[in-house]
Length: 212
Image (cartoon, rainbow, N blue to C red):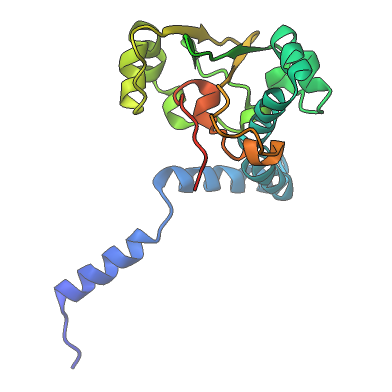
């Protein structure tokens, strides 16, 4: 007669449960299934969009824009003057970047982007917005206490550096142009782009370094 070992059963249950998708993931999958069954969306189209934003866009396009600005003074000037036209020449223009302004970090200025009303974000060059960008805590505190928020991201801004907070809207979105890291004079645009973090283009990262 088989024996019942409650501890073993509990262990098996926990093991199986740890491999289940999260509740939110299950809800998304259930919604996708219903929409596909009703013929409102195509599952292959959804997969293509997910792949595009996770693999092709991500923050990669933004990083390439930053690297090009570091390498080409004429492009940098055009980007700061009229970001929409500058990125249009690269084929990166989209609905979320039709009204884009680029703000430059300098030794005396640090820029931080937030959207206090919702979570407007230039996703066509930065991919999907990180979860923390959408939270009420970030959206409210970034304006009231930017130094405190940056400290929580591990970024300490000296008191002699001015922090400028830019509030995105549906009509105007921002991209931070971080400072080029020291010692990168001989790197290609591709290598420079690999140094650029998504957070540095939002402003919750400041000092970029050469990766070993």
